[in-house]
Structure formats: structure tokens, C-alpha cells
Image (cartoon, rainbow, N blue to C red; front, side):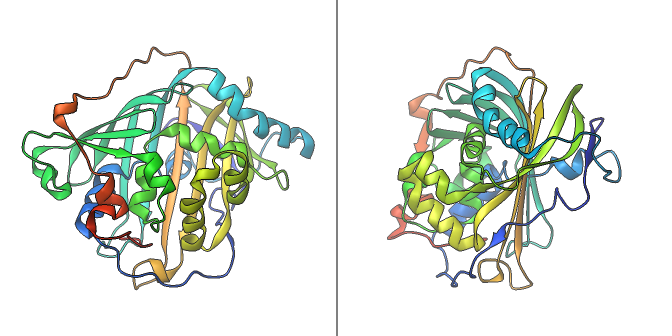
Length: 329
């Protein structure tokens, strides 16, 4: 890619701050449904930091006092959402998943209404080809090719699978990597993490020109406990399950902010201890969201109801006799 990204060595690949390792979970139910969701919905957990780097990382050319750095990151959410609409690009790479010998990478581009929480993206999914994803409010819709519909048990005549992201977030079920990826289909979900960035340790790590716009990169940590307290108390079950799975209470992020204080790129990466990953070691998830072309027209509607089937119960395990537990599969 043509973007010029300069980040201090070691910053982009930081791992989540560790807490005691989680206990091994029971094998997850409805494995086929989750594999389908992994293949179709894993668009968002990370990427472009490495993909957009034009060469070896170098020292930043910009420095700021700690207070200014904290203020820039703290204000980025409101300024980004306040801009209304934008184009986005998301790439997700999941490595170390049981049953796969190579990393699974899914990429997508599209348009989103950052305030109204609606958008449409075209995804490139290994083994599935091009897949259309829409989100309207808290509902995710995925248009599957005919050969993939049986993997999620879609009835004849149903070409769209729908997933209630609120139900997934509030479920007592453990969070698999595929489920985490599913919730990432809504880029505004990632933006909301900025509201829970810890005030400690925010600092400049580099500069970048992204889609022609100069930006400053900041390293920070998302406090998952603060996310529940400040942003979404009802999400406590899924956030706590995520903390157990990744063995950490904070997620390291790198945030690229432009001269108007708006987000231009967000990178998140974390590892999953071996108890939840393939036998060969630990799994990892790496996400980068890029945002540009603020103000682009966006109008997205839900697909026809008679062409849509809700698969929320299958994903959370409610439709299979109980909740699924944490797994990388």
C-alpha cells in the first residue's frame, strides 16, 4: 500500500497485558455454525499496521506532552462520530486456530454511518469469495453464497443470515474467536473502545500519511472493566468472558488521529493462551480499521424479511441445548 507509516519498533505488535491464565473451557457446541461464522464474519480483528507499512519502522518525527496525548485520544471518539459518515477498510487475521495450518485473513471495505450505526461492506472471505455484510442498529446481516448457506442451517429461500449483536454481547456464553470477529462487523463497536482508553501510558509512537492525510499515532490501552462501567454495563458477561479467554484486562491499541482530531486508523491485537487455542501454541487476533472520506453519502436498509433467517441462537449456543464456551475454533 502507498500509505507512509512510521511507528517505533515494538509498538504495533504489543500484546495484551496479562492477568492469570484462564481455565480450559469445554468443547464448544455447534462447531460447524461457528466455523461458518468464522469464515463469513471474521472481518474485523486486525491487520493493516503491517500491511500498510511501507518499510522498516522508524522513530517518530512528532512528540507531545503526556497530557496532550491523552487529550487527543480521549477526544477522538466524539470527533470521529460527530463527522457522521465515512468509508472504512478492515482486515482481520486470526492465527493459531485449531484445524487450520495457516492464518485466516478476511478483508472488507465499505461505507458506514458512524452516528446512526448502519453500513454495508463487501468482504473477501477465503473459500467463500465475495460476501456482502450489512449492519443496521444492533443487527448484523450476512449474504451468503448458495454453497455456504447450509453451514449455518439456512432454510431454502433464505439468502441472508442475521445476528443480534446485543444478544451476543449480553450472552453468558463464552466468546470464541469467531464470535469476537462477528461482533467486529460493526466498525462503530471498535470506535466505542476509545471511550474506555486508560488515562495512563498514552504516548506518541509515530506518524503516518493515510489516504493522503497526515496523522499522529498514539499507543494506549483499552480498559475492559472501564468499558463495561462507562460504555455498556449490559455487556459485562461477554467482556468478562473475553478477559478470561485472552488472560488480560486491557487491550493494547494504536490510534492514528488526523489534524482535526478524527480517527484515521485503529489497530488492536491480542493473544489467546494455549488452553483456548490450537495444541501447537497460542492463537492471536490482529485488527486494523482504517477510516477516510468523511461525509460520503450512506443509506443502508435491512434485507427483505422473507429472505432472512436469524442465527443468533446457533451462535450463542441457545439453539443447541446450552451456551458455547470459549474456544479458538
